[in-house]
Image (cartoon, rainbow, N blue to C red; front, side, top):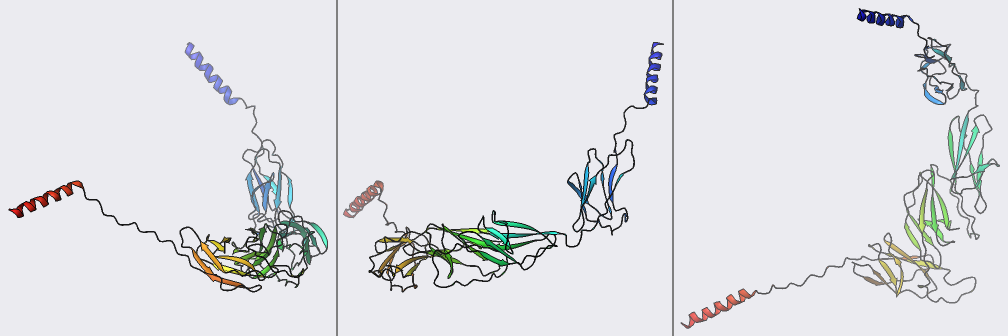
Length: 420
């Protein structure tokens, strides 16, 4: 009987559990979706919001397709934004669903076109001198920082035709602007600044018209100010404050070699590293060494024609890099990239003998065929051969004592036999 009462009580509790209405309510938004749609052309490929990007709380969720985009509703959704190039952005708040709501949240995604010409573009001005001032049609807009200055322009504004880049101590760069950027477009302009020459040049250098293409720079650093820099045979300027920056274009014929020289110093000439890419700066580091130990007593000349003011070069070509070159008893440098170029004052005592040496190679000596005239280079070509190893002398192995004893015993027996 007691067991029957327990069962009846248990059944009654279960019945109460199924009949009592739960006190907790379903959280709003469970299973709902947020629907972004063009209300006038729903599910149509002609919706002007097609391909527009939909952002929820600043996070991109996807793009509109066929006039529709849907995502599951999540508690905490706050704002939305719909963006497409050529149209005004649309934004607003995502409404909270009502308790027990079963219908999706609908948001009108129809966009309105932006007014014609109201887009924005950008102009990037690249230069090798930070702090240089950038002006458009004579109006200063900013300064170069980390090699670049960016100007935002409205496509509906008055187009610029010229730009200048300037800084104290540098020759101002003046360039033309062939076209303005369209909406969301960026165009690049380049300006290479060179230091103002410290002396007036005797001839006006030819200004080369840019040949088009992307531009980069070689930055030639040197320990001797006033040294002249040549790319191949083209004079690119002089070292000022320890550096000379040279602009090059990727579509132009690349330079192959450089030469840095100054009277009283050993000239350095080597191959250039690979040409820079767009906006890149490639460093070229050069060290010049005095040739005072090589300079002989010059003839006294007038003040306007100082000793050594005219010189030529002796270029010693060898097949072994790192070989040491001596003229007389003076060391003048080593072979690099197959050559060492030695400046020679035309008024000095002529050089006669030279020596080229390196460990592991036979030392080569020779005579300088003639002295170079002013601006002339006399080339000398030599071939260094490896030192042949000295063959080890052939020695006979000593005869062992048992062999000697056996030979003596054999000789005695032979004599004994002959006597018998």
